[in-house]
Image 1 (cartoon, rainbow, N blue to C red):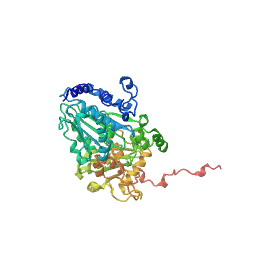
Image 2 (spheres, rainbow, N blue to C red):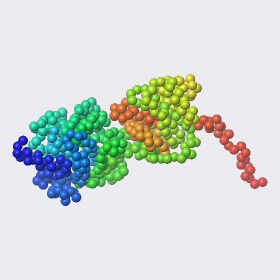
Image 3 (tube, helix red, strand yellow):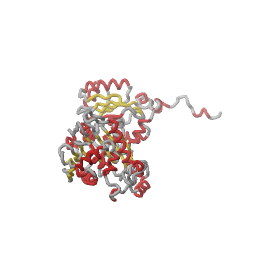
Amino acid sequence: MTQDDADLADFIGQFWDDPLGFVLAAYDWDGDPQMQVCKLPAPWNLVYDSEYGPDAWACELLDRVGKKVRTNNFDGHTPVEAVREAVASGHGIGKSAGVAWLVDWIMSTRPHCHGTVTANTSDQLSSKTWAEIVKWTRKCITGHWFEMTTGKGAMRMYHREFPEDWFVHAQTCREENSEAFAGQHAVSSSSFYIFDEASAIPDVIWEVAEGGLTDGEPFWFAFGNPTRNTGKFKDCFGSQSHRWSHHQIDSRQVQITNKVFINGMIDDYGEDSDIVKVRVRGMFPSASSYQFIGTDDVDAATHRHLRTEQYAFAPVILTLDPAWTGDDDLVIGKRQGLRYDTLLTIAKNDNDVHVAGVLAQLEDEHHADAVFVDAGYGTGIVSVGKALGRGWQLVWFGGASPDPGYLNMRAYIWGQGKKWLKEGGCIDEADKQLYRDLIGLETVPRLDGKIQLESKEDMKHRRLKSPNRGDAWALSFAFPVQAKKLAHIDHRQRRAKDYDPHDLLAD
């Protein structure tokens, strides 16, 4: 290392906990016209001697990261909590530039760090994300420390003196490539992951990357348009929000976005439309592109609280969705009018006699008027039930639909359930897996226009659990049911026998 580089290293070292300071010091904002697209906003323009710089959302992000670094105060050997930042935004806010600044800051201030960058597609990764990293690194005051390679399959940035132990590389996010994200550790430095367009990155990649956060001073950044209501990126703002600092950026609040185009989109589609929510407001949609049941409908169902008299008059329907394989659960549910509850879940069980006994007990306990069983693995259970004197009914998911607009029986019963939700159906707010099942199921496009739902195997391929709770719920809509206590009453006998309309006539 030359004396100039040693002096530079001392200068850069002061920014180990100040990524925003690094970004403003490491690039020539005043001298490079190509960088002068955004005025450094208040209050940062009062702190840093620069007219131009990152926009407010990026300044806030970099400040948050710096604060977390100071709180962790990594000593070089004792592992600290991972810095996790998730940013959902509309289009055009400059996310890829933000990715490049974070890469240059970590690589310049964390000797012997190890990093991985990925994106939703190989084209996005090579032509946008990695290209932006290359562009900004070449402008960076420390850029000459690093060698850069480009091109699909060869995207790597590494320190010239430590090419095998001080690097960041780009990896495609295909599921079969998941092992490439494993084993990344930097015990005395930083292991970091950056996910661009994170909504579409398969869950298995997230799961494997988790293993790189166990030692050193780890970082994990996830950026993207919030296009899907399921998956790990959505979880950053939901079930895993306690682990992630999560922020949603409205494109209208960003200096560099095309306001004319944005206003035209809002005029065409409406501010509350899903396309504006995703592309402008940085919000997750009410329903993703192929999502069958809208999130708004399921949210409403979880927040309804029905009085007993609002559903107690209705027939009681029990359902059973069996499970014989994998880590699926056997699910027994109950619907009475507008109220649905998951009664019982059992790990996969191929003992038909045992399951039939449990179902019979619940049928008696809840005075069920009908019991519907998924025929996929349920034929043996129903046979045992028949021997017990039970009249349980098989439902063949692949059978013909009563409505020609649906491809098969499974699509039809889910369609009936969708209508039920809109009509005021109520589900248990605490049943998080049922919630995920209902919003997670997607449709399969067809030329004939029939509604076809993805299979359980398709959902597993997307790293979602098999929707056994959702299927148990949908089974309750298979056939019309009349309450047994009313079935024996002839409609003609319901009239008051002592009533004579002629009694009202005057003599």
